[in-house]
Amino acid sequence: RRRTRRRDVRVRAMSDSSDNDCAVLANIGSRRTGDAEAVRGAAAHETTHLAKEPLARSDPEEYFRRVRALYAGSGAVILGNIMEWYDWTIYGSMEDLIADIFMGGRHEATWLVFAVPFVARPLGSLVLGWVGDRCGRTVALNIAIWGMAMSTCLQGCIPNGMPGAAGVLAGLRFISGISAGGEAAGVNTYMTEVGGAERDYTLAAAVGVNNVSGSMAFFLATFVSLMVHQLPRTEQLAWAWRLPFLAAAPIGIASVLLRRRMHETEAFEAVKAARLKAGEVRMARESDSPSTVDDGNLTLTISSGSGEEETSSSSAGIGNGADSTVIAPIQNAPVKEPSCVEAENLAKSSWRENSFSIGLAVVVLAAINSINYFPLYLVRWLQASCGFSAFDALLVAGLCKIVQLFMTLPVSFLGDRLGLTKTMLFGGALSTLSMFPALFLVLAVAGHEDEVSGDAASAPVGETPEPTAAAYAVAFVVLVGWLPIPMSLYSILSPLYLTSMFPANFRGRGAGVGLGLASLAGGFTPAICSILANHEAWLPGIFVTVLAIPSMSVIAWTRHAAARGSLRVHQRPWLF
Image (tube, rainbow, N blue to C red):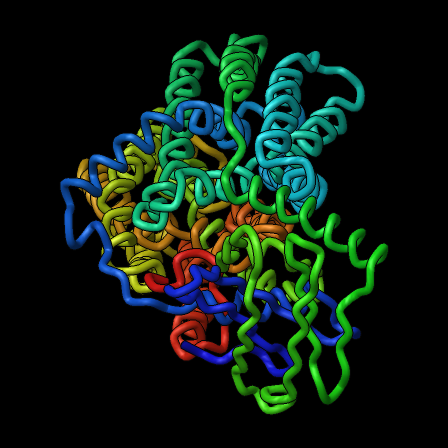
């Protein structure tokens, strides 16, 4: 085991078989850093990278049994998370109609309004993340689902031709973004904390719920949009465009009812209990004589049940990183030795301490979010650059997400068997090598030189020549049969990477703000790709590829840093 931080002393009461003394773990820091620093040192010492055998490797049958039970009990989480993904997916699927109704046919402006919720997400993550850390994970999730359902439904109620309609649409989407900011990180935090002590063995499958709900929402939004696009154009613009937004009402109502029955996570309950216990300790020390800590000698005072005090002093281990042990006999009732989780929960985490982890999460997830949202822009790209009809383009994007849905279980199994970062690095490398060649190949096989040169990328939908049968075949093979596989390997496990960077008492805020800031890149991806495609139709592929390079570099660095002990991993460090 690695040694604790300097200036920390680990005090353990060893049980003696003769008099049945009990073990006590106490940690005392200096007056300057206080109890929180000392307990944090104990947690760091106790959280060791013990080599455990992954259940997915030792007993696959039991692993899949637990995964089935996990998903069977996650209906409220999945349905509510569908609401989050459905909002921005239906907007992207209906982009051509929204552009004509609200933006005067300006597609770049329409995609900028699409990005508005992602600008609001960091704010929502900050507010609802604080609610989740202070009041409970389920409280934050219930607030989020109300905001998302109402704002999405109201978008479908905006009258056509109303003055300032575009501003109203942007305002409703801003409200939706605040709610979605708390939902996105809240779901990931909840799923990685619920499930008891054995959840470590299925953590990758737990965060796979996010991909399941996202893929289902994408498919649902695409299906509804396809039905709308089968109607005459005049009816689409007159009233049919509202139906997909209003369809969010039953999803929202069902989610609200189901989430009322959700139980709080064990990790938050431990944090809550630790706060109460820490408050009692502080009050007791203020009323009685507090423990004294000198620069050279450490004095530990332990009160027994009879009111007597056992005092131990030690000067070893302070300032030189040594690990000191002091035996303090306990009278009367045994005291339970606090676990590493309990010790960690007692420690207070600050923004300053977690700012580096937030930065790492932003860099890693910026590229992953861009890849996740790229299929939305793919609909417009296939129409403008390759001549696909709206129906065919939506079909390609929808099938792409269906493949990602079916990739959830295999990728989760790999993550729980081989490790988080190893799976992500493999998928990221394949995605980086595949994105640009896939788009360029579709353009080339389409047989139009102007697409490859970019002249048709800015052409209105319907003016690009009809693609050949070979173009359709290549698009389905490359964009549906291949590209979703590396994208899934890269993105499905990313929520676990995010939550692993933060301790339980800061996870709601840290994961929320990190994901919210990273979502800015994903939210602006369609707008940026639309602008780039006006110059060269293949530039969107280059853009997404370039984003992936620093992301994979950070994943590789964190993997190495965690292995050598210079980076703290708070969830399942032994299979990071």
